[in-house]
Length: 142
Image 1 (spheres, rainbow, N blue to C red):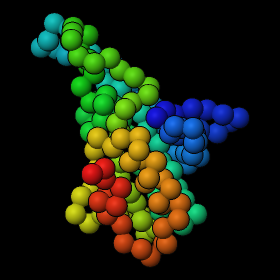
Image 2: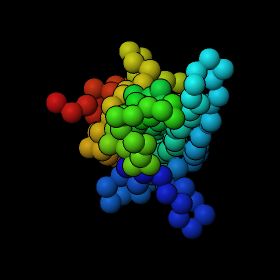
Image 3: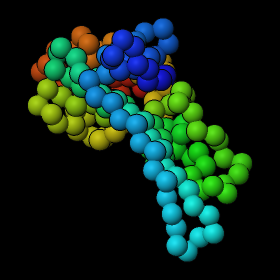
Image 4: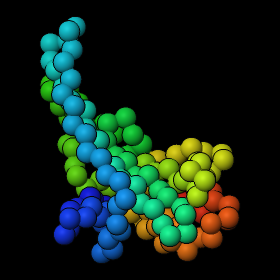
């Protein structure tokens, strides 16, 4: 999974499929701590994909998200933690209905979403009727 730019558009690539991203953000913030001997940084990436059916999904990964990049080193002296990657193995998602509301009334977000789950989700939202009920259970791996 990764964000790419192609012919002036941003795309979210999952496996061999590319989905048009209607919104993209890339954040890198250097942090300075008065009481610590080392400074650090926070990094996150994300996009939104909107479907003709009215459904939308927000996809995010990085510090403080439920994704494979959650625990990458954020203080310059952190060692032994996973390195940051632009191609995470899991991401955090939020599905939004056509009214702009969270779609799953039990859970706001779903974390640690795998490539297979995000693929199922994107195909589902492309076909799901606007007035349908959505639950993250519809895409969870067993």
